[in-house]
Length: 629
Image 1: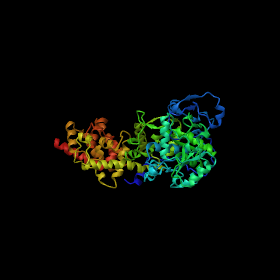
Image 2: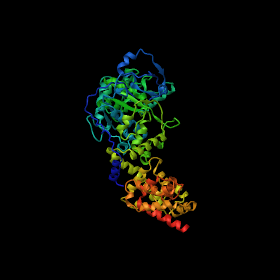
Image 3: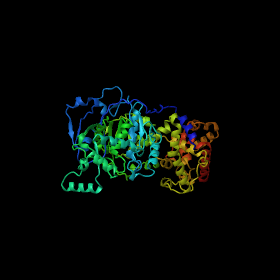
Image 4: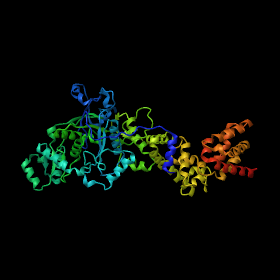
């Protein structure tokens, strides 16, 4: 079936319209309140956390210092306190709050994947929450930035496929490597002079130094520290090299990295929009800012880029929380205000174990090829770590998802409940079929054709030619050869016919295969053996057969929903003492092959099969009855 035909069908089914998508702009005045940051690796055992059960607005920080705080250690302690945390609870404002900031203000959030692999479920969820925060704010912007500084691990087609997967899911961006923007370039490998300039600034202000230690020396130092029972962190060997000597060795071509002087900034603390107050118990080691190949590390590049691109909210996975103090220290060293940081709880398996990237459930391709509607996938992901407001309708657009979300986030491991995805998928499918939105007719017509109509047609063809066998059909004597209803042999009509069959069955089927196995009579003519078995059990009431034949002769009865056909039959036989159940049993035998089979209502079967097909099936039944008599 063509998408245009399906679009017209959808438009006829409803007339509700939706609001147009908001246009995000990038040239705006950024008025915001700042919390602090977030980050990556480190030994998770070396941290202690301070946090208060009620989050505070950044402007209230000093006033709150004297209040009683609860202390706990590690991320486990953070997770165990207030599993659902609303940062905005203490903000006196009439407008809703998004991650501690009024929705009246703009949010600029970035999704910054590394093209060292393909997009997985956790990354898509991070991108989604960035997009939703932007949409829920006033004139925000969603930025796509490619962090390709790890040149040794790049996957050739990862960037192209990543963009393709984001678009498949329905996520678009306002600035990025493909569409540009005011703060480009948006690919880190094209920003090397920017990082080198900022590293030089840190060197000039004595916040960093060159380290000339070779890999062999570093390994030897670690081994000695380990044998001495000390932490195997970099001991600051090259700190004692004076600036002149460092410059001379660098100009001579000696290999080096640039390290940050972490002890100058103590133990940075921050307030995360989801996890609350956070501070590590030990100071950071002198971590690397610039590698020997001239590429920056993540710690430097993300801080520099987030500042220069005017990012207001850094939304990323919980695994980066441990590195946040490094980033806070860098913001302080540059004299910059940090953005608000929000770290999302990680996805885990149902048993609480960490999800492996080798787990099939994390692969986006599983959902692309498995019949999952993109919008249903986004609704499901939005509820992994947050939740929808009560009594919301199934979201039809990303804007709908943003409007439905509470922006109250859960801490810690988020269990991957695939049965909930099926729930969202079915609700979205039903909304498209029976509550059409004219503004989305073209888009949703393509989805219905791709996810429902074409799979049903493919399965019907495969069953008909014998390439697959349906155990359910075979068990009910629907065996080969099966004769298709004539409409399904017409290339221009079969798509529309299947669509009408889908729409007529409101609820009750989970997949195209279910519809076929439950209602085979809609797609094939009833086999003679099925009729014979049914007629041998009970003969249909002749008065109903006569009334049906009379109704078939009246062509005008078969227009529209065919309700006149049913009315004509009832008005003919009820005065003769035939009850409603008997009428339907007879009609079910003719249309579906038996009184006790699952079928749609008689009126729906009239409308779907049509006058010519009912004529054919009635004649077959009458001939078989003649033989039996």
